[in-house]
Amino acid sequence: MRWTTTLFLLLTVLLGGCSSSRSKPGWAIALHGGAGTLSKTSPTHEQATYRESLERALREGVERLERGESAIDVVQAVVMVLEDDAHFNAGKGAAFNEQGKHELDASIMDGGTLRCGAVAGVRTVKNPIGLARLVMDRTKHVLLMGDGAEQFADAMNVPRVPNDYFSTPKRREMLDEVLRERAQQRSDAATNRHATYGTVGCVVRDAQGNLAAATSTGGLTGKRFGRVGDSPIIGAGTYADAHAAVSCTGTGEEFIRHGIARSVSARVAFAGQSINRAAHHAVFETLRPDDGGLIAIDAQGNIAAVYSTEGMYRAWATQAGTFKVAIFEEESCD
Ligand code: ASP
Image: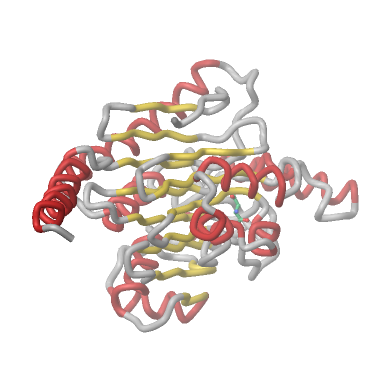
């Protein structure tokens, strides 16, 4: 090869690198507050309170990303805001199990390192996602459950609350309704499934290109004591690697059965599908109608928010200036 050609190629690589870093996609963020929404016909002022909550959480994420925080720190902070907001079925406002108690699940994953942490069936931890992060950072394990997770919380000095801190009148009404229907139909499968989906989650691509995902939930209303859904199961309700970050909401058992969150990143990585195509495949071709939805983000910051229910509380923003909140609207994230 002549030296001029070599020089030309070298310059192309160097300049190409510079120009691609100039046009490098910036940060991007999406969050959800569950695929079990108010009905489309509910009063506008009720819908407006959810929109305000979603906007507040999104703003928290955007401000942190603008300050240069990492994807993993941002997903945790945003999920904490949603956990503290009684509108959603995670932290304060969590669903009741069939015994009238709360058992909470959460997980978090860093796409760059595949480090992850999760807790299941915690009863007194104010912010389960914070404890999941500590499982990731301070132990060699991935998932701690029940008493063991509570004991770990003692050791980590995280904020604790009595179990009824999580209770709200709205969730109590939902439990009563579920138990009433169950008694009438003598089955625990006959309940209006998606009325109870309210899990929260967040996925982020930070300015450095790192991906992360986090999910937190009170689980399904009227669930059996000890039941664990998909939200704390890495690969089912939450997943992040170098290709995609995913957080799910819906009938946890189905998301576990099909390893939904991991299946989305695998479709991007191995089948070369777009994040949108991969998300649609999971929601409409793998899951059953009405099973729920998910949010996902890829390494370029493309966002997908896909659901088979009437709506999904969701919001997303990008460094390029997008800032949107939606419940029912058929809005694409492109
Ligand atoms: N996926 C959650 C679970 O099964 C429920 C939800 O999304 O609201 O525990």
